[in-house]
Image (cartoon, rainbow, N blue to C red):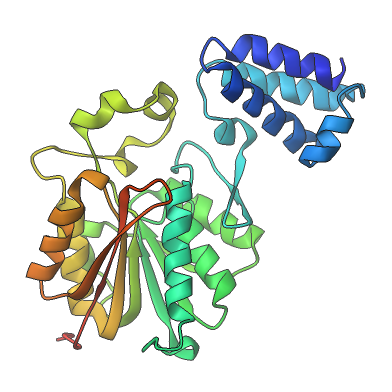
Length: 295
């Protein structure tokens, strides 16, 4: 089978689940990933005959995709901020808006007026999942002491694998966000960052079925009665465990930008800033701890 023939097969089968453009994009991403081709090479190789091993692997991937499995899980990998990451259904697939959050942190730290010492940074990522946030931060800030926590042992296992893949040393541990006060993490951090669960149960029907069927619900959903439950717990911990001028960065639900800002201001954070993502949605927030409150 040639690449062109397999691409056609992908599109024919996947248009049951996706529109033509998305099915075509999934086909090229899958084939180019297995074959190790960039876009230009892919276009020039469509008449090439596939090796039997590659053909069999791609047919297995197509079979998985036909169940609704996201491409990243079918491939077992994705890219985040230019780095490779292994992913599986124990962890969320890293999103572009999370890349924007990481980019915000890195750009802030490299500003001339930054009050944080790049040579003495201590960073905590809460709800680390695949480890994408702390691994990228460590890769770009090699002198920083970086920790990631998650309630899921499967997520921590994936994060440790990704740290090895990217050749960085990040401390990962299983930890419940609602038990942080009783953990051994009670020391001062320069930065606390989190992409916690924030999709309300009433928003479920707006999500694609491949997300609902395959991605871990405990990393996605919160009740409509208390949509900011994770932000409340995280900000309580951060208020008591951020150094003077330490920063809190959070990914947020676009429907709760103002509510999250008010929550942080009421807890005594300063210079609270809500930021839009590239699609104009309020998806990130930053707050400063004006004075050390460590007991």
